[in-house]
Image 1 (tube, one colour):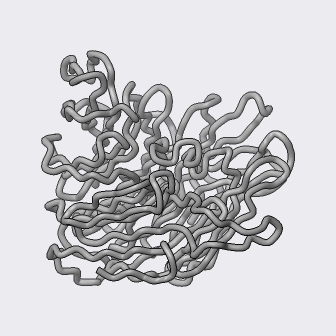
Image 2: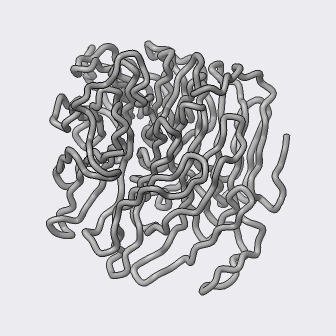
Amino acid sequence: MRLVQGGVIVAWILGACTSPTRDGVNGVGEGSGDSDAGPGQDHCDGGAPDAPPSTCAVTGAPGTIGPELELPPNAGAAVVVADRDGNVLYVGPDGVTKLDAALAPVYTYPHGEVVAVDDVGHAFVAGAFREPTEFGTGVLVPNDNVDVFLVELSPSGEVVFATQLGECGGDGVRSIAVARDGRIAISGADMGTVVTDAHGAIVFRLAPSGALAFDTHGELVIAGAFAGELDLGDAHRLSTTSPSDIDAFVARYDEHGCFDFGIQLGDAPLPVHIDGYGDVTTPRTQVIDGVATGLDDSIAITGAFLYEIDLFGATLTEQPSFPSGHLAGTFVAKLAADGSVVFARSTWSANEALPIGGLRIFSAPLAPSPGTAIAVDATGRVVVSANTPGNTQPPFAYPQLTRYDAVTGASDLSIGNTIGPAGYGLGVAIDGCANLVWARLENTPSLFFPHVFIAKLAP
């Protein structure tokens, strides 16, 4: 065990398990990778033998908007994934909708809280259900009060299989990811994380829950937040200063569910002085709300904090209030496959009264809504969806999309404004032509009728 000193900053715990040998060349190796959006997103690097269709590409300067689809008010789209052919799937109140490369509707499957896609375009849908439900292969009856279902859909939307996991879905399903070998990981606050085989049979269970991503070697990364104690397995535990103190964590497991390493992000050494506010003397909240893996098995995380955080040895602070509400600080970091820090930096201030990257992480920090707030492209650049705060009542905010250099973390693309329309960023993904796929909510045509937009942007 190695602990980076300086208060409850970063606890770095190395497992005793033997992990697969990593060749270090473009992430080549057996297993699975999530090279873009957080939960459940497959490689979209265009590097497989069958190249994506040329009609998928968006031309123009970086950030140029190509196809764009306006959805009805409150249409969801915090969960967005894209496949190598440029198709896009999102979750809304009506279930899971698939769009083609031009964002035209393909099908809607009327169930699901989360969705992931594999390398051949099959979709995997999961969610909680409370009553006998027909998922496409016969009626499933939930165990106890709330169960969790898992469904595989063909590229055209036919149900391949539908099964129930017999897990408690009381707080819903947070995330799903699919490995290249067909294994499926599903996570929720009440159920923890389960990994199934390609047919939905449970292989192993893990106590932590959060955002999920598989790497190219089939190792599973879980990132989120916890309070009190968190059992990472293999006799490794993380703890906060009290049952009400909330810290962030990242943990990685091999294909057998054996613990590899874990990281805890918590408070800076207290007291911490914040200019314009004063001294912070009690622990505050730090959370991770999105994770993605790169083709080199790097791990990208994004999250937020109230008042202060120690981010890998650097103290970040944020004033806790402003004219229209409360501010949260946000951050992005990238770790190499061996867990060393590539870069870690503060990002935009955000309005914590509104979703950050599609997640209301401060209204329910231990059971956030599903969302995909981060992606990694084939070159290792990290893309984050969030909001920037407004300055008028009620607590307005504005959508923000930012891309960070693969090595330095410097921003090379920033899309957003501070004059309107008000709203916030939702899901983000990267398709098979390297286009950025971004969902955002905008309060247009008026504040009382917000609409959701899904757009493809040139890389």
